[in-house]
Image (cartoon, rainbow, N blue to C red; front, side, top):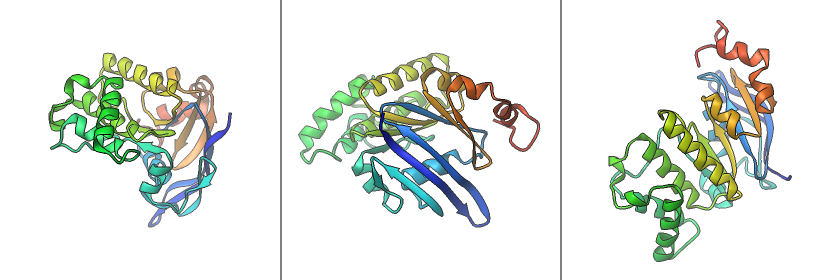
Length: 243
Protein backbone atom coordinates (compact mmCIF):
# COMPACT_ATOMS: atom_id res chain seq x y z
CA UNK A 1 0.00 0.00 0.00
CA UNK A 2 1.13 3.54 -0.74
CA UNK A 3 1.91 5.99 2.03
CA UNK A 4 -0.70 8.73 2.26
CA UNK A 5 0.93 10.64 5.13
CA UNK A 6 4.58 10.90 6.18
CA UNK A 7 5.71 12.64 9.33
CA UNK A 8 9.43 13.37 9.14
CA UNK A 9 11.26 14.43 12.32
CA UNK A 10 8.38 16.65 13.40
CA UNK A 11 9.48 19.06 16.14
CA UNK A 12 7.36 21.80 17.72
CA UNK A 13 8.78 24.17 20.33
CA UNK A 14 6.72 26.62 22.36
CA UNK A 15 9.16 28.98 24.06
CA UNK A 16 11.50 26.63 25.90
CA UNK A 17 9.12 23.66 25.78
CA UNK A 18 9.55 20.93 23.18
CA UNK A 19 5.98 19.71 22.75
CA UNK A 20 7.08 17.35 19.95
CA UNK A 21 10.62 16.24 19.20
CA UNK A 22 11.83 14.37 16.09
CA UNK A 23 8.63 12.36 15.59
CA UNK A 24 8.58 10.26 12.42
CA UNK A 25 6.07 7.68 11.15
CA UNK A 26 3.95 6.87 8.10
CA UNK A 27 0.26 6.26 7.53
CA UNK A 28 -0.51 3.91 4.67
CA UNK A 29 -3.51 4.56 2.46
CA UNK A 30 -6.65 2.72 3.53
CA UNK A 31 -5.49 1.99 7.08
CA UNK A 32 -6.35 3.14 10.59
CA UNK A 33 -3.41 4.30 12.70
CA UNK A 34 -3.82 5.09 16.39
CA UNK A 35 -1.83 7.69 18.32
CA UNK A 36 -1.76 7.10 22.08
CA UNK A 37 0.11 8.44 25.08
CA UNK A 38 -0.36 9.92 28.54
CA UNK A 39 -2.04 13.28 29.02
CA UNK A 40 0.29 16.08 27.98
CA UNK A 41 2.37 13.81 25.74
CA UNK A 42 1.98 16.12 22.73
CA UNK A 43 -0.61 14.21 20.70
CA UNK A 44 -2.91 17.13 19.90
CA UNK A 45 0.10 19.36 19.18
CA UNK A 46 1.12 16.81 16.56
CA UNK A 47 -2.39 16.81 15.10
CA UNK A 48 -2.31 20.60 14.94
CA UNK A 49 0.96 20.45 13.01
CA UNK A 50 -0.34 17.80 10.60
CA UNK A 51 -3.58 19.68 9.93
CA UNK A 52 -1.62 22.94 9.55
CA UNK A 53 -3.25 24.73 12.50
CA UNK A 54 0.30 25.83 13.34
CA UNK A 55 3.75 25.52 11.82
CA UNK A 56 6.41 23.03 12.79
CA UNK A 57 9.61 24.36 14.32
CA UNK A 58 11.44 21.79 12.18
CA UNK A 59 10.63 18.67 10.20
CA UNK A 60 8.26 17.90 7.33
CA UNK A 61 4.67 16.84 6.70
CA UNK A 62 4.18 14.98 3.42
CA UNK A 63 0.56 14.38 2.41
CA UNK A 64 -0.45 12.45 -0.68
CA UNK A 65 3.02 12.95 -2.13
CA UNK A 66 3.05 16.72 -1.52
CA UNK A 67 5.12 18.65 1.02
CA UNK A 68 2.48 20.58 2.99
CA UNK A 69 4.80 21.74 5.78
CA UNK A 70 4.32 25.41 4.92
CA UNK A 71 0.70 25.29 3.76
CA UNK A 72 -2.26 26.82 5.58
CA UNK A 73 -4.99 24.68 7.15
CA UNK A 74 -7.53 25.49 4.41
CA UNK A 75 -5.03 24.37 1.77
CA UNK A 76 -4.49 21.03 3.52
CA UNK A 77 -8.26 20.67 3.70
CA UNK A 78 -8.60 21.32 -0.03
CA UNK A 79 -5.98 18.65 -0.70
CA UNK A 80 -8.13 16.11 1.15
CA UNK A 81 -7.44 16.31 4.87
CA UNK A 82 -10.34 16.35 7.34
CA UNK A 83 -10.15 16.95 11.08
CA UNK A 84 -12.27 16.68 14.22
CA UNK A 85 -11.55 18.05 17.69
CA UNK A 86 -11.64 16.56 21.17
CA UNK A 87 -14.10 19.29 22.13
CA UNK A 88 -16.65 19.47 19.27
CA UNK A 89 -16.62 22.76 17.37
CA UNK A 90 -20.19 22.86 16.04
CA UNK A 91 -21.75 26.04 14.63
CA UNK A 92 -24.17 26.04 17.52
CA UNK A 93 -26.81 28.46 16.21
CA UNK A 94 -27.22 26.47 12.99
CA UNK A 95 -29.13 23.25 12.38
CA UNK A 96 -27.39 19.90 12.22
CA UNK A 97 -27.91 19.66 8.47
CA UNK A 98 -26.67 23.20 7.83
CA UNK A 99 -23.50 22.39 9.79
CA UNK A 100 -22.88 19.49 7.41
CA UNK A 101 -23.73 21.64 4.39
CA UNK A 102 -20.86 23.96 5.40
CA UNK A 103 -18.48 21.01 5.00
CA UNK A 104 -20.07 19.91 1.73
CA UNK A 105 -19.57 23.36 0.18
CA UNK A 106 -15.83 22.65 0.06
CA UNK A 107 -16.35 20.51 -3.05
CA UNK A 108 -19.68 21.83 -4.32
CA UNK A 109 -20.39 25.40 -5.38
CA UNK A 110 -24.17 24.97 -5.63
CA UNK A 111 -26.02 24.97 -2.32
CA UNK A 112 -28.71 22.52 -3.43
CA UNK A 113 -26.03 19.99 -4.43
CA UNK A 114 -24.19 20.52 -1.14
CA UNK A 115 -27.43 20.06 0.77
CA UNK A 116 -28.29 16.82 -1.03
CA UNK A 117 -24.82 15.42 -0.28
CA UNK A 118 -25.07 16.63 3.34
CA UNK A 119 -28.29 14.63 3.71
CA UNK A 120 -26.44 11.50 2.54
CA UNK A 121 -23.62 12.08 5.03
CA UNK A 122 -26.08 12.78 7.84
CA UNK A 123 -27.79 9.45 7.16
CA UNK A 124 -24.43 7.67 7.05
CA UNK A 125 -23.56 9.11 10.47
CA UNK A 126 -26.97 8.31 11.98
CA UNK A 127 -28.07 11.93 12.31
CA UNK A 128 -31.00 12.14 9.87
CA UNK A 129 -33.64 12.41 12.58
CA UNK A 130 -31.81 15.42 14.00
CA UNK A 131 -31.26 17.33 10.75
CA UNK A 132 -33.48 20.24 11.74
CA UNK A 133 -32.34 20.46 15.35
CA UNK A 134 -30.19 23.38 16.41
CA UNK A 135 -26.79 21.87 17.10
CA UNK A 136 -26.40 23.45 20.54
CA UNK A 137 -29.17 21.14 21.76
CA UNK A 138 -27.27 17.92 20.95
CA UNK A 139 -25.70 15.67 23.57
CA UNK A 140 -21.98 14.78 23.60
CA UNK A 141 -22.23 11.73 21.34
CA UNK A 142 -24.44 13.54 18.85
CA UNK A 143 -22.06 16.51 18.70
CA UNK A 144 -19.14 14.18 18.07
CA UNK A 145 -21.04 12.50 15.24
CA UNK A 146 -21.86 15.91 13.81
CA UNK A 147 -18.18 16.84 13.95
CA UNK A 148 -17.33 13.69 12.00
CA UNK A 149 -20.18 14.26 9.54
CA UNK A 150 -19.06 17.80 8.76
CA UNK A 151 -15.50 16.58 8.14
CA UNK A 152 -16.74 13.73 5.92
CA UNK A 153 -18.84 16.15 3.90
CA UNK A 154 -15.58 17.62 2.60
CA UNK A 155 -14.76 14.19 1.12
CA UNK A 156 -11.36 13.75 2.81
CA UNK A 157 -8.74 11.20 1.82
CA UNK A 158 -7.41 11.35 5.38
CA UNK A 159 -9.53 11.90 8.49
CA UNK A 160 -7.88 12.99 11.75
CA UNK A 161 -10.00 11.98 14.75
CA UNK A 162 -9.07 13.59 18.08
CA UNK A 163 -10.43 11.50 20.98
CA UNK A 164 -13.74 10.56 19.41
CA UNK A 165 -14.52 8.26 22.38
CA UNK A 166 -13.99 10.85 25.12
CA UNK A 167 -17.11 11.24 27.24
CA UNK A 168 -18.95 8.28 25.71
CA UNK A 169 -20.40 5.34 27.63
CA UNK A 170 -19.91 1.68 26.69
CA UNK A 171 -22.85 1.44 24.29
CA UNK A 172 -21.93 4.73 22.61
CA UNK A 173 -18.35 3.53 22.18
CA UNK A 174 -19.55 0.39 20.38
CA UNK A 175 -21.63 2.57 18.05
CA UNK A 176 -18.69 4.92 17.47
CA UNK A 177 -16.40 2.00 16.63
CA UNK A 178 -18.94 0.80 14.07
CA UNK A 179 -18.98 4.27 12.48
CA UNK A 180 -15.17 4.35 12.32
CA UNK A 181 -15.14 0.96 10.60
CA UNK A 182 -17.79 2.14 8.14
CA UNK A 183 -15.68 5.21 7.35
CA UNK A 184 -12.69 3.01 6.61
CA UNK A 185 -14.89 0.82 4.40
CA UNK A 186 -15.55 3.91 2.27
CA UNK A 187 -11.82 4.02 1.52
CA UNK A 188 -10.97 6.86 3.88
CA UNK A 189 -7.69 6.62 5.77
CA UNK A 190 -7.89 7.41 9.50
CA UNK A 191 -5.33 8.75 11.97
CA UNK A 192 -6.84 8.83 15.44
CA UNK A 193 -5.84 9.97 18.92
CA UNK A 194 -7.43 7.75 21.53
CA UNK A 195 -7.05 7.00 25.25
CA UNK A 196 -9.38 3.98 25.25
CA UNK A 197 -7.03 1.09 24.51
CA UNK A 198 -9.83 -1.38 23.74
CA UNK A 199 -10.84 0.91 20.89
CA UNK A 200 -7.29 1.15 19.54
CA UNK A 201 -6.93 -2.62 19.79
CA UNK A 202 -10.12 -3.27 17.87
CA UNK A 203 -9.75 -0.88 14.92
CA UNK A 204 -6.08 0.03 14.35
CA UNK A 205 -3.57 -1.72 12.13
CA UNK A 206 -0.74 0.23 13.76
CA UNK A 207 -0.26 2.25 16.94
CA UNK A 208 2.19 5.09 17.57
CA UNK A 209 2.94 5.79 21.25
CA UNK A 210 4.08 9.30 22.19
CA UNK A 211 5.53 10.06 25.62
CA UNK A 212 6.92 13.43 26.72
CA UNK A 213 6.78 14.70 23.15
CA UNK A 214 8.79 11.84 21.64
CA UNK A 215 7.80 8.67 19.80
CA UNK A 216 8.30 5.76 22.18
CA UNK A 217 7.26 2.89 19.90
CA UNK A 218 5.41 2.19 16.65
CA UNK A 219 4.00 -1.28 16.10
CA UNK A 220 0.93 -3.51 15.85
CA UNK A 221 -1.61 -2.97 18.67
CA UNK A 222 -0.98 -6.21 20.57
CA UNK A 223 2.77 -5.71 20.53
CA UNK A 224 2.38 -2.14 21.75
CA UNK A 225 0.09 -3.01 24.66
CA UNK A 226 2.47 -5.74 25.88
CA UNK A 227 5.60 -3.59 25.62
CA UNK A 228 7.17 -2.91 29.07
CA UNK A 229 8.05 0.69 28.17
CA UNK A 230 4.45 1.42 27.19
CA UNK A 231 3.11 -0.22 30.34
CA UNK A 232 5.50 1.87 32.44
CA UNK A 233 4.50 5.07 30.64
CA UNK A 234 0.83 4.50 31.50
CA UNK A 235 1.04 2.71 34.84
CA UNK A 236 4.45 3.62 36.27
CA UNK A 237 4.91 6.08 39.08
CA UNK A 238 7.02 8.60 37.21
CA UNK A 239 6.10 11.86 35.50
CA UNK A 240 4.61 9.98 32.53
CA UNK A 241 1.83 8.44 34.61
CA UNK A 242 -1.63 9.85 34.94
CA UNK A 243 -3.50 8.77 31.82
